Length: 212
Ligand code: GDP
Image (cartoon, rainbow, N blue to C red):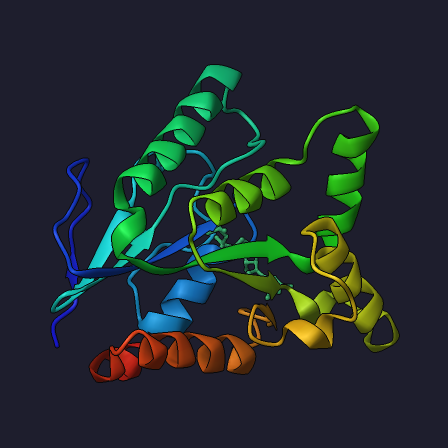
């Protein structure tokens, strides 16, 4: 199967799609490079990408959404435009989306969410997760940068993510939806397992090897 990189404003036609989303700097590019061999730049200046990048494997489209949320040096209007683009994209393509992979920085997640909560705002990650679920999209949470979480705090951090995304802890009850990973260390086992399983369940066994 050939890997094509579309980089286009135009939606790409495909029968099936997996979409990767996440706030900027959560490690989405690192993850996608390791997971599907996507030729993405790592550590690029946040906010530069304002359109999805596409990788196509026959009839399966893998989409890399622009990073959202706060980005240094990116004004509010631009951030809102990116958010609108993401929302519209999911509304338009929900039917063909096998699952969305929402990448979060495991360690920072609870702290950032609580800061927003304290201001009386819905944290942007929670807002997006809820929106996707309301559209009926299957969301897999990739809890990245687990290498930064001390072993003793692991369960607490993952339970904290569950609680804020309305999943009843312990996180181990949700092994099919939450994947503790470290893209930097290439420790992606739980996410590989979940994605291969989703593809099989969707009758897309032929694409299982797209996930490296
Ligand atoms: P993106 O903006 O979400 O695409 O993030 P990048 O993939 O460009 O990564 C942002 C920064 O996080 C880079 O410095 C990466 O090396 C780092 N990073 C990515 N994954 C991990 C990880 O699992 N652990 C740690 N400690 N750092 C990571």
